[in-house]
Image 1 (cartoon, rainbow, N blue to C red):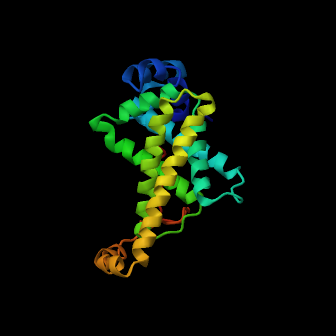
Image 2 (spheres, rainbow, N blue to C red):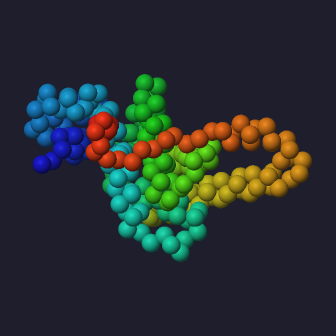
Length: 228
């Protein structure tokens, strides 16, 4: 049985390039999917905004499936990250749908949703690549990748080069920039003077821990967030 939200989303994608993630799109999706309006509003209380969130999450799921099927063993770690970001963009079949999404999540009332989705994508990438950090690095890795990913998406939206070759070059340059920052951090740690200056901040950061993650299960008392 098709999930009602998936059914709505599939119907909405035909209208998003023309009407954006709007109430008009949501109304058309309800009509085209032949879903009961009450059910549609129950699974998407915010209408098209919830569908836009679902669309982004669907892309993350597709990216993870592609990543799982890709042999990364011979790649440098920076190339694994680049591959994950590239796969995330390549699962998109219509740029205009993403463009409309960036417009939606740029609005003040939806900016928090956009930031959460961006963070979620980068968190999924790091988890898929086997990140085991449980300190401040858990946050800095995801924050840094969020910056790289968001900049790459904006560049990709305007890229008309064959096979998006210019986008992948842009992505490589952004990752190279991040690697330069990592080299600088290493130099600071190795410097007798600078390492002493950073002793205080480092002590504070050493007490920052990653969020606790509980394994999924069906134990009594467990709760699973409703599907987005």
